[in-house]
Image 1 (tube, rainbow, N blue to C red):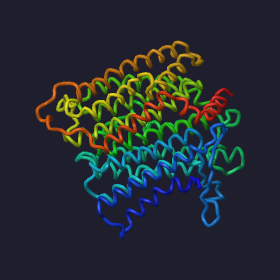
Image 2: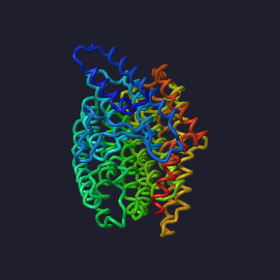
Image 3: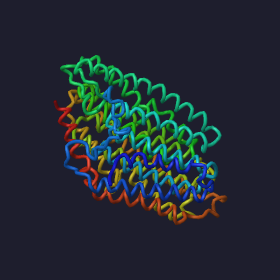
Image 4: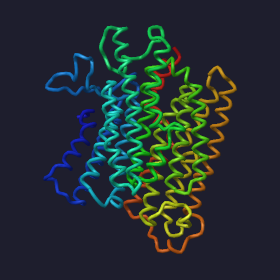
Amino acid sequence: MLSLIWLIFAPLIAAGIILFPRFPNHQVKVRRFAKSFAGLHFIYTLFFLLFFDTSLYGMSFEKELTFFGMTWLKSLGISAKFAVDGIALLMVILTSFIVFVTMVVSKIHIRSKHKLYYSMVFLFESALLGIFCAKDMFLFFVFWELSLIPLYFLVSQWGNSEARPAAMRFTFGSFALNMLLFFAMLILYYYNFAVSNVLTANIESLSMDEKIYPLWFQIMVFGGFLAAFAIRVPFAFLHSWYPDIQSKAAAPVNILISGVLLSSGIYGLIRFNMLVFPSVFKLFAPILMVWGVVNLLYGGALAIVQSDIKKIISYANISVIGFVMLGLGSLTQIGFNGAVFMAVSAGIVYAALFVVISSIQFRTKTTYITALGGLGEVMPKCMYLTLIICFCAVGVPFLMMFTPKLMILTGAMISDLDNDLLVKLCSIGGMAAVAMSAGYILYFFYKVFCSVLLEQWKGLKDLGPQEISVLAAFVAVIVYFGVYPMSIVQIYQSVAGMIQDILQV
């Protein structure tokens, strides 16, 4: 009953059903089908969590897609195998949840090309699920590339007048860097064959042993993987596409991108750069810590000076990703646990903030902070729900982001990297970023909800039942995992232990 094949390809089947010529081209019927299917799919993913063995030291629910009983490209050692560990399963559940929320929110924002829109969302979901579940390196690459196609259409077709050039820049830039990724995969594949005399693209079989593979070779291949993942994370100075697209895309697409697209880059960084190249990752760890602090401070500084609330939240999201990099670079188990927890938390919290922005944009037709103000007077329900989400983003105790921030900063402080001064400076930078986050998040909240109410907004209506339900669901998740954080950490605890063992070798 629990098949990863069904999990990954069911959204693709749903997309095909919607695009089928005989399927009614009626927005209500299309939307209801999409929303119902996404809800059922999310429930299906929860069953995987229910039956997941958290003590297992490896992958679970392994399944292979065969073609008339034959393995995909068997003679080349390439197979369509899927499996998940604790980290992948968390990303799968996050993706399914965010897609379901996107379907619900799309009702008030998508007014044209409904069949194409909902089919592209399902295609995007299927590609992301394939990324998280792929056990084969080239299979991972197929889904990685596939995710760009629906994303281009989602941004360009339903964004504003400037969305198409922004989508084009991101798509072609990503394709160019993905060629580096593919080239690195080919080198790794053939060099592994030359050393072991076995053709395989199984990710678990490709761990680079520094006694066999020369360090220069590992660094070269590591760089190819890093380049493709860094732009999607995104690392500072490779981030410009993110606020550019977010400010121009439709509100539901903002939720998709902030909720799950960035997580795929973080997952790739862990799955390949950490697990396949542990020796090089240890060399790169101090740079990753510094880069993480740069992300934190640079993203935070840019968030404060923005006039568009979409860009404020986009730069805030870029900033908080710095905590993930800081945790991974600490090379400690508590730092790693915090980094994965933060990746999930950022997907939840910033998707929730974009839901808030979507509700405001729908009512006011603007996202410029100078044109807003005092909305809490006419939208009190929205204000109180947003306040909880903003407190979470700041890192208030007993809310979801407090624990990962504490774990990451602790991991950075106790890191046994050789350069003690660097470790201390990075820890101080992380603490400064926590204080800075209070500045730009509360600035956003105050300017939108608490300043003087402008005359033109006095007739605005508060959130409807559907919007309240969506935000209440986010708040429930934020509070539950804030009060009981170990319920997330225990899912991937065994993976964290395995990675720690690998890095200590």
